[in-house]
Image 1 (tube, helix red, strand yellow):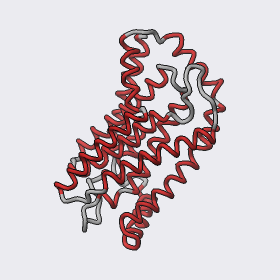
Image 2: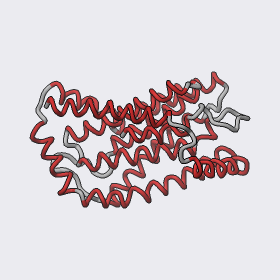
Image 3: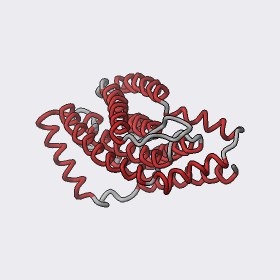
Image 4: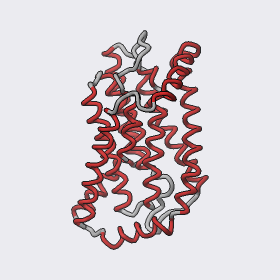
Length: 280
């Protein structure tokens, strides 16, 4: 058990460091495609408005995420005997009842369906009040948070049905891990809006995105520790969650910009969740 605790701690530290470093890396790295996408978004902003641009990029991004995650699910199925079963057996041999397992049972609820919905609703209300105080668009928090909750729910359910890989003998958890995906995408959108309204500096942004990456690793660890998922379902949940978050960051960019401000809502915030993805 001590080895599992050490592994969890090391994974969280590495996730934080990778998320932090990814956030603060030079903006010019691989900027070509990003510049073209930003140009296309600016053109859509002028023709369709920020809301229309959001809908177009959200639809296109959601389609691309599905296109990536469907073959990823097939790959996960092929790794069942080679990787999933040995890791499942490892957890079954070494996990024991006690304080650590009790803590894992508590922490893993952070990614549950209703817990994430309640947090999302509460955050939307608070951020709406903040937006009113700052004279920002007051409907943006509810739109972004409500949409990410709905998209994650139906897309993750659809992926589970299409891939249909089954589940461990201990639970009904299947591909991809919804707990990991919900925690990353829903909490990530909340973080994005909050940092935008705070006009947070680079160091604080890096710390917060690194913290989200560490939290995402911990959530995935709990799902494996408690044998709620095959381990490749957890990997897929991380990948899916970060991809969906990246879509919402890019699609929601114009909505978070202050009226009349064509630039970024919070410094380099747009690239942060994509960078933080390396932490999971």
